[in-house]
Length: 183
Image (cartoon, rainbow, N blue to C red):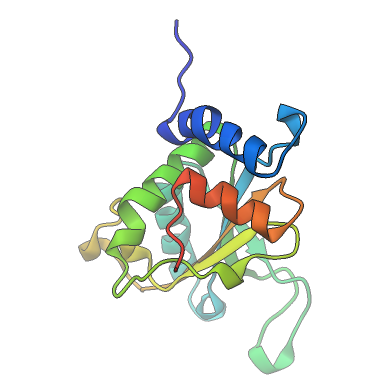
């Protein structure tokens, strides 16, 4: 049986790797940066008062990613916010390998074009190691979410973690994979 490979993974191996080897003059193919994982995080501060909001957010995140979301809990108590240690306040998913490439493809192809007034992702969202983070204001940009079923609109942060050593290498990698950046 033939091995399944997504469009993004195929593009990485056939186009991005040779281009980056030439541009950054790597001597070994293992030096070329690659996408390691994608972490999607939803913080629900309102979950302190209504835990059902967090259940809905967890279900929606599981629908978007195709993987069960994990609850995140408060690390310490904060009296001003009526927050106690170990209270559930959010959820997250870490995607790797096949699911990561499939999510990246769906995010770039279907979800980003649905963002209102989208002019491209900011290049200022890179850290020094070449990892990229983007914030999404509402979960409705994902085609998996039905508008009628949504109880509360919430945002999420999506982090693309790479093996790049600099922000320039990370930007070259992600733009080669199809991430639309501002000019």
